[in-house]
Length: 300
Image 1 (spheres, rainbow, N blue to C red):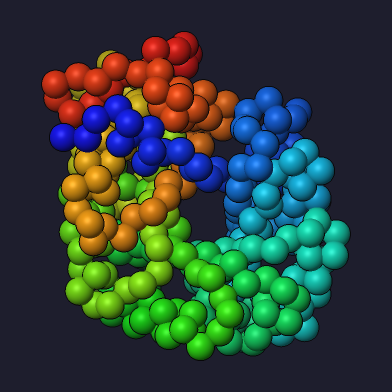
Image 2 (image 1 turned 120 degrees about the horizontal axis):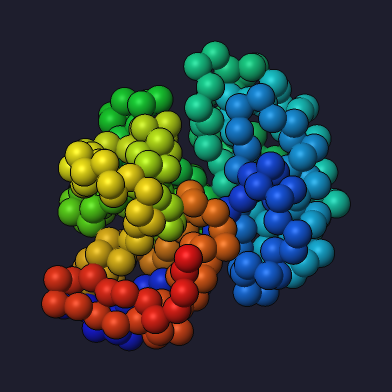
């Protein structure tokens, strides 16, 4: 079983994310996150990429590392892709990105998946060689399992023949078991890309269920639906302590574990999730015999 130091080590260096809308409601990210934290900027279907540029500039000015999303199905053509890359590099000093297909049924132009974005060579042209790609421990409603596996093999090959330093950032899940099984499967298939596992931040059960359905979370959602049968629990704030403990235990005891980092999804708001995460990183928590823990700070 993972000890306190194992858990601290597992969460230390976690990344976070924001949408332009959430950023507009955050007076100063320095009141939420420690300087130097990498912050992904989510691109929602129908958004204006100029809003992404604005947030990237602000994050850079406040001392953070902005990582904008490039969603293939929301980009009209190669010229638009290059214009957007140029903007975030020249205006916000961006040197790393996340490439995804994007949850759009009908692509706006010539791109349908992230491999096509990578294959343009434009990220390399603008000096961006740290590239994150999406991972789906429980599958995706937008792609078949076979397509996902084929794309990951392509990305491994892409890293080998370029200067790119790539890693996988996954969708969140609520149980460690499917994540561990997925990681082991990737190992047998030869995946060499480090994995940053998605962890759901602190939110009410009602909010978590809403986000899980919208994001296509798989079988691990049953953990929530069982709790939801007790209506009095819907407004109780859930913490990912059991998930973090079990994944830290896996990372500690399996030398072939591919998980090297944590991406925190602030589903119930960045402030609460950040307070909890930093408390864990600083060892301000008490382990219990059930494989969970409780932080020793106020997260209300």
